[in-house]
Image (cartoon, rainbow over all chains, first blue to last red; front, side, top):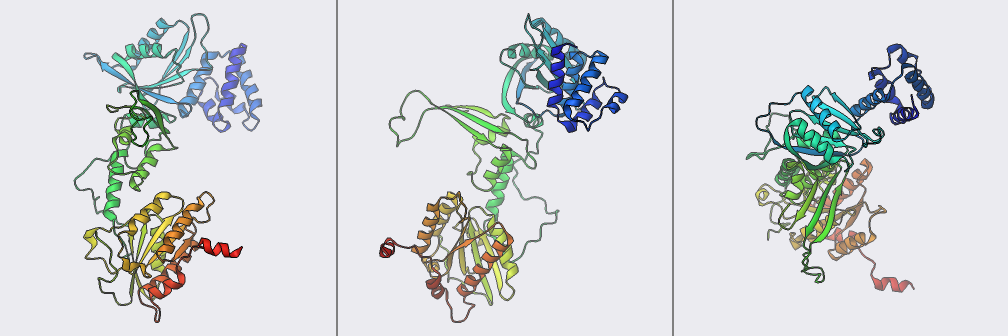
Length: 334
Length: 185
């Protein structure tokens, strides 16, 4: 095993937290059960790394096998780094639905045509998602395994999620994906977040949606909490209305975890008290950013508690309705 | 303008009604539960609202309100502004001992001190008492509930020889004016 391979393995073991290490190694096909039992997981991590290096040398494992371990770890813990959502457009009308082997072949063929030195690994996860790991190299250099790109795609949906992609290789990945999935083009869905499942749920609308109804009162079957008859809320209807509008705009129950919403303003400055800035021809550029650990939850609370005025402004509700969190606002609209 | 009037309805026997007005609608629920539990001898009804004016639909069923309490959270400017705008919808008859201000987070370091000063000036100009409450612990809530009950019973006329107006001259908030401060020098 050469130095770079050793370094990759060392970095990987350092990255995996100690508690998960045993589980990950168990899933890795290249360590037999006896090997696994012989490893003592109470030792400090650097001792364990030495043992593992020795094992790998014995078995003659290469970078290919180590990247499998990395992929196992990332699939179990996808919430590292920023995931970006993309949408495939213009499906070919007569294309039959793509199946896995066809996609694999096409993707590998396309990408290796575009760039010679590239390392691709494709794996199908239990929930019907295809995970692709790509390590990029040049025409002259070997693939860089320290900065791989991960792509997640559900075959029957037009959505693709990518992390770790630099703008240099973006057009290449786009082209390979578009050709392999038989669509016309791929565009940025303007949705990004740290939590993969959250942005997937947001794009595919898999959170609990609330639809406007004429009679918003819920069914009386559930036993209501016994209210003290001496306490009465004067404006209960208002509170219920606000809650209903908040849930209509953002959804009910647990919401997908988004961290940011960015609004880039390219509108003209309009404030009658400030004469120097108003009335200029060029737009006043500004960026408004909302950040939170769970942005949709905070926005829903703002609306239901009355901090944000109802009806919910379409600027905020388009986060869920359109499934994006990056907006450019011009004078003509979003 | 639909003003809330203090004497337009008949009082109930051995009953006192209190209205808690709070923009955030959080502390009022805890306070209401405690107030109702604390009082054993008098029948206390608590009405909760976010701001005044109160909806017209409840006009018929609403009993005579004996005490209006404005709960202001000093951590939010909106809380104070909402209370100020709600004041306009009270009949002036209420300001003779039937209005009280309850302030939370007065000891909080991150609260700008000007806000407490403006609440105090407001309470002083209206001749109303200003209570400070601690809303995070049960003892704080219980204490606030007991103090409110004491004022409520007087305002509802259930304490012999005491009226709301009489009590308010003793408990009303005062702001040390500039003249007093000069005297100290």
